[in-house]
Picture 1 (tube, rainbow, N blue to C red):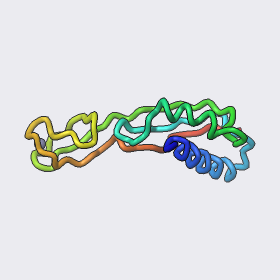
Picture 2 (tube, rainbow, N blue to C red; picture 1 turned 45 degrees about the vertical axis):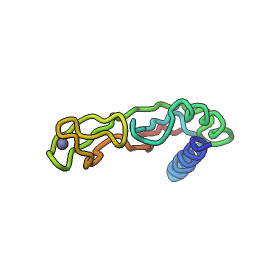
Picture 3 (cartoon, rainbow, N blue to C red; picture 1 turned 90 degrees about the vertical axis):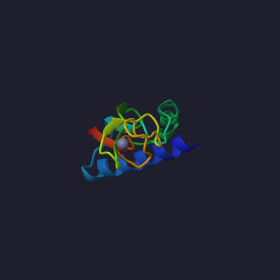
Picture 4 (cartoon, rainbow, N blue to C red; picture 1 turned 60 degrees about the vertical axis):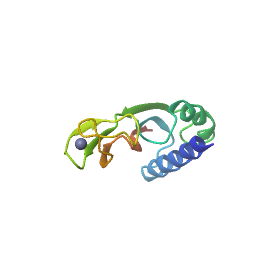
Length: 113
Ligand SMILES: [Zn+2]
């Protein structure tokens, strides 16, 4: 499952960070996931249960912050919210848009002890 490998890479990044400060465990972790990121949040939560077993994150409270998709049209310069990666510009209908936000998939913060 795609989401399990995402969880595993989050765990390994978080464990590396925790090791730097010699933390025994991660209490809390906040993830930022853009609405355009190719990840299913429900599947991620499900995969999380398995992925964190026997790691420093086993009992960590996990929070997910969603980031809205936002793009700028390269043709007319208009900025707009996007639901899907290939949505056209609502003003001029161009598909030449650059994504500003929404593809994030990262650890925003963690609390370790
Ligand atoms: Zn446009």
